[in-house]
Amino acid sequence: MKISKKCKIGIIGMGYVGLPLAAVAAKKGYEVYGIDTDKEKLKIIAQGKSPFKEDFLEKLLLKVKINVSADPKILKKCDICIICVPTPVDEKYYPVLDPVISASKAVAQNLKKGALVILESTVNPGVCEDIVRPIFVAAGHRPGRDVFIAHCPERVNPGDPKWNVGNIPRVVGAFEEAGLKLAKEFYESIVDAPIMAIDSIREAEAVKILENSFRDINIAFVNELAKSFGRLNIDIVNVIKGASTKPFSFMPHWPSCGVGGHCIPVDPYYLIEKAKSNGFDHSFLRTARAINNSMPEYTAEMMQDLLNDVKKSVKGAKIGILGLSYKANVGDLRESPSYKIIKLLEKIGAVIHTYDPFVLDKSTAKSLAEILKKSEAILLATNHREFKKVTAEKLKQNKILVVVDGKNFLDKEAIKKAGILYRGIGR
Ligand code: SAJ
Image (cartoon, rainbow, N blue to C red):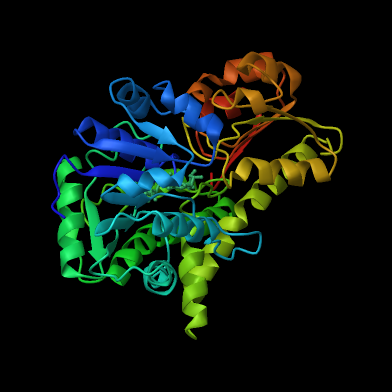
């Protein structure tokens, strides 16, 4: 096979990763087939709309055509099949590879001879060798002849106005030289950024785990500092800003009420579990995960302390939670710290109101004014741009007694000056 715009592209998984990829490939002139089990989602995409809020994608979908189907048989005509399905962890933080396994089987059962199969889902080193390739061999396909398997870890950053699948550099690895060349050429044809061909598929898997573990441990570092500085009356945000004046060898991360999303709190566990099966204990990664997992409880306890300081107990207290999404300016609830905090506060009797402008259907209040009116305490859990409107004046007008700022996002000095008890994370 040669890479050209005559190649038909099949993308399994029309979510945050697969749909933008399909849109960009279509924009670059490929005939693209999008497969997903969620027929509701497919109906929305068939109308040229996005099932989730994403400015870059919504604009692009209006200009391109993606042939969507729930039937994997359409893969029989595809020269390149790209698997973009979720790789979550279960409640015990064990990797859940079922979506990757079922998607690989669907491709293997409908494989066009000589096709290129690329896994974009984030997995630990070894999954392509130990899980994906055996599925194709079991289906009678000879790797390097009937099928070329590659891995190109996804680098989607939901809500990012600058970086998107069309301009983010990528890393690609494969089992065979021929497959590596095909995969590199394909990504070079749709991405306006360098594509690095790495020596092995295992290294390609490790790249993404490194990227996201790096972020998780650095967030854990400042979260631990926040707990420590909180006792020393040091404002960690100022300290990080100060350290950021160093023009080299420093990269700021920020403490917060928790680390959510489908990447950062999940990916390190893929490596932890894989290494454990090889007899190695990633104690540092585990410690970082434990620190970040402790932040929702730390934040809920802070709210309890502040309410006690104004002689109120949490029991019966009307607490307004600002933000349900795990990340600013997107509506994504996966692993969101907000829900962990809500559960902890409700368990000790708090009356919770919620408002998230990106997740109104799950919010009990339908506006900022409404939640401020209904609450006597405010806990900011997501730094949505709208919450900049939560001024000291508005808080005072609504007789808010205490504020816990889970993202260090509000005007601490003005709120304190208004006589409202304020605590941030590390400030
Ligand atoms: N967070 C902090 N402190 C920080 C940064 C983030 O507490 O300094 C929290 C966020 O509030 C959120 C969670 O961590 O709850 C994850 O935030 P994120 O900005 O990392 O957002 P994600 O989950 O969308 O991560 C994606 C990742 N992209 C991919 O996996 C392809 C990650 O690699 C990117 O670094 C990240 O976007 C990014 O830079 O925005």
